[in-house]
Structures are given as structure tokens and as C-alpha cells.
Amino acid sequence: MKRSEKILASALGGILVLFGGFFVVRSVLLRPVNDLRKQTAATREATSKIHAERRAFFQAEDKLRALALRTFAESIDEASAKSGETVTRTLLDSRLDEGDFTRIPVGPRKLRGAAEIGWAVQGDGSLSNVVNLLFLLNESPWLHRVEGLSLSTGDRPGNVRVRFRFLTLVLDPSPDVTRTNLAGKLSLDSPERHLLNPIVARDLLRPYIKRPPPPPAAVAGPGSAGSAPNTPAGRVPGPEALRVVSLSEWDGQPEVHVRDVNAQRTLRYRPGDELAGGTIVLIDYRPLPSPSSPSLLSHSRVILRIGADFWAIERGRSLADKRKLAPSEIPESLARTP
Image (cartoon, rainbow, N blue to C red; front, side, top):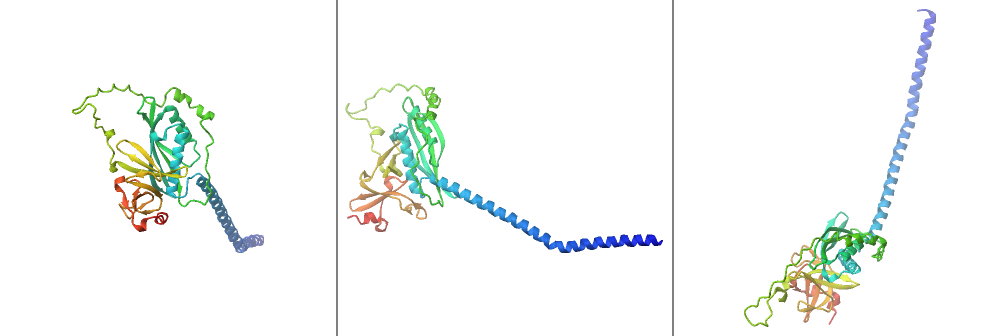
């Protein structure tokens, strides 16, 4: 090998060794820097994720508080009473006779973070007033849902029968908020309600009503001509046919709704009225063991005074299921009453 070639090879080898040494030194010196950069990037990513979760938490909390302001109450019994009062008030605002409507409590049904309660409503009214009712329910500011809506032929010509469920939620746990009486933005005089007038004018919702058959001729039975026929309407319903279906409030006054299952009508009582052989003295909302199943709780009952004793009828039970209260079950406000 010539001398020039040896010099060139040596120079090339020196260059390669120099470059190799450079990269080795560079990797050794820069490895901590690269590790620090990776840790910094991971920390920034984790911090950004924490900030995003924090923003999502506060947004969800604000949304939950806004929903809580539209709920009726924090407890199931109070929410049931106030929602029942709202349904009754909406019936009156719709120009319907609330005596023609039945309201039966629904629920509670446990959900994740809430309980669903409501009322099954059914009754007859003119098509115009039923449209008023559906319009006001749709515009109600309270947290609610109307489901199972159906219309059928009413008992009287020109009327329709409406049936639906008015459902709401009780948050569990509920945020600590100050609730107020909410008022709808629209009323029956709003232009939005007048847009529904063609439905009433063209009878789009009322089903076809057949002409009623002529009344049958009266047939005199054996006996005196002046005796009254023994019709079901003339019989006095027994206590088994009368069931306590609602213990709600109306304008701050507690009410007892008793359903006559034979006549398919609802009777309304208030404290001081006579019921089941006694006098109504209190609507009790204390959670107590159910008489029929002590492992379950009964959340409300009507208390009667019969003589010197107190008797109770649980919500959902008939008047035949009244039971005498033990001294330990009598509320303190009644125990102090002479």
C-alpha cells in the first residue's frame, strides 16, 4: 500500500472514530435531558387531564344545581305532595273540573342518583280544555315528563277522556339549593296557544262518538210502584271498596283522596272531616314499618280519632285496613293533645 493511501485510510479512520466518539458522548450527555423532557411532557399531559376533569366536574355540578332548582323537593313525600298540587292547579288553570279527574300516585322507582315519582291522571273534559291542559303541562318549568298520553271517547257527548302519567325526579343526594315557586313563561293567552286552535276547530284529537242508544223502557218490578230500584248506584260502598290513594297538599292544606273503586270516582277529605267512623286529625309523613311487611317502609298515613284512641290507614290501603296505633306510634303533637 502506498504511503498516500495509508495517510488517506488513517485520516478516514480518524474521522470515523471522531464521529463515533461524538455520538457516544452526545447520547451519554443528552440522555438525562431527554428523560427530563419526557417526564415534563407526561406531567403536562396529566395536568391538562386533571384540569379538564376539574372543568367537567364544575360544569356537571352547575348543571345539577340548575336541575335541582326545578325539582319539587328533596324528600319523596314532599315532592309527591307538591307535584300533586301542581297537577291539580294545572287542571284548574286549564278550565277543567278537577273533580272529574283521578290522580293516583306512581312510584317511587329507584334510578341511579334519583328516584322517579309521579301521578297517573285520568279524566274527561272538552277538547278545548284538554288541549289547554296539555299545553300548560308542556310549558311547565318544573322538572317533569309526560308519558303514556292517550285520548278516547268521553262519557258525555262532546267530551274526550285523557290519560297520562306526570313524572318527576327526586335527586339523591340533592344539592343544597334554595327552591322557589316557578311560573311558566307562557299562558293560555299566549300566541303559541292560539296556534293550536285549528286542532280544536277541526276536532283532530277527539275520536268518533257513536250516537247513544235510546234509553230502555222502565220495567216495574214486583212490589209497590213507589219503591226505588236496587241499583248499584243506590248501594253504600263498603270499606273494602274505598281506598286511600293520595295524601297530598293543596295550598298548604293536607288532603286525603279516597278512591271508590265501584263508582270509579275520587272523594276528597281534609282534617276535621269524618272518615271510616272517626275524625281526621293528622296526615302523618313519618317513615314507619309497613303493617303488612315490617321489612318495608310506609311513608305516609292518615290518622283518625275514634273515641279516645287513634287509628291509622296507610296510603294505598282500604278503609277496612285501619289499625289502632300503639302509644309508641302516636305522633308527639297528638300525644300531647288531651
